[in-house]
Picture 1 (cartoon, one colour):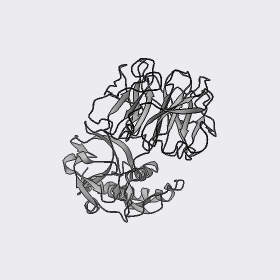
Picture 2 (cartoon, one colour):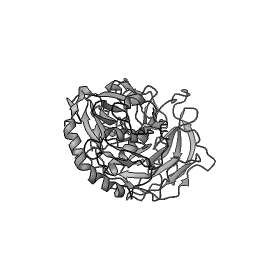
Picture 3 (cartoon, rainbow, N blue to C red):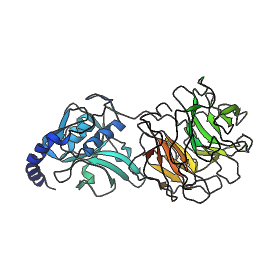
Picture 4 (tube, rainbow, N blue to C red):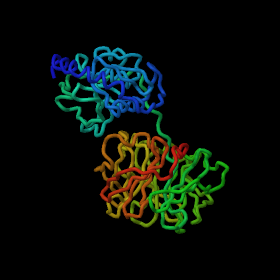
Length: 448
């Protein structure tokens, strides 16, 4: 669209947009900012602020101003939108946004960066959905016919983006943007701990106690939790846990990486309690240092559970079990090129009905991906996107596979950004849907 055409459309829309502005935000939630105007801001907050205008259908209007979640106002155009998302002190224009940012290569783009054609247009980069192919999502405020929108899909190799030649854009990073803190490892697990045939959830709470929440077989668990091994904080500094029967007792227990970076196993009694604590790999003290996530499963069809986990080199390693509570030497499940860098949580399951366990996990782009297993300790690189590719799993810090509703199809339970436990049922073909709360009450899983 030419500059003159854009100007005429803006003029025609200005009165309507200005009249609507007074009532536009009457029901808008007042989100809490962790940044201050002109101060440091995390990438996740930038995207949350961008989403705020999308949710409120802010129109394009160069002569109008709309509020951010805290009530400060910004100009309703492309550069005003970026200024709002970055929480700047004022609404800059496309030619001045580079004054508060640093030029970078397209390949270095991260969430919250921008693509800026300094003469005409700018928009926010959201996430890579497939960086090797150039696929990404973005947020933009474009023209009076296209209110604030996103996350939309695009490809960095396209000849044009948002109506302008891609070659006209430069990539820029706000000087005060910072990466979000690395998510803490999940310390929750799913299993049948009381022998009733229904999946339960266990986890280490904010007081470092292992709590047990029995499932009802209909997608919910009951609380408050029951301590599984006393209330003296015995699980302090455990970095990750997984559930399974590693000793052939028929009772589910808990394995976990302790404060000394050893993998310890605590046997279950079939009534929701644990005991003991045996080192699953004697003589390998501290072997599990810097593992980022673990999950339990029989990936080789032996009938004996082992442990899979992302090691310090970002490789997925599988340690087969011997059925007596011990693990053997680790084998790479998908090469040794650090392909699992940026994954935030993993779980094991057969989501496609092949009878072979694979790995599901939240990747660096905050998408939930499933990597099918071959039954011989390996997983395929041909991952299945389980719920789209729009970064919907941002800030989830746990996922657990299981059939919580008795359908015979595995779904995913996880702790979301609001610290609620949600269940997403599976379709038996590698996908999940929905998302229902498993324990009523808001934020009850904070600290797990």
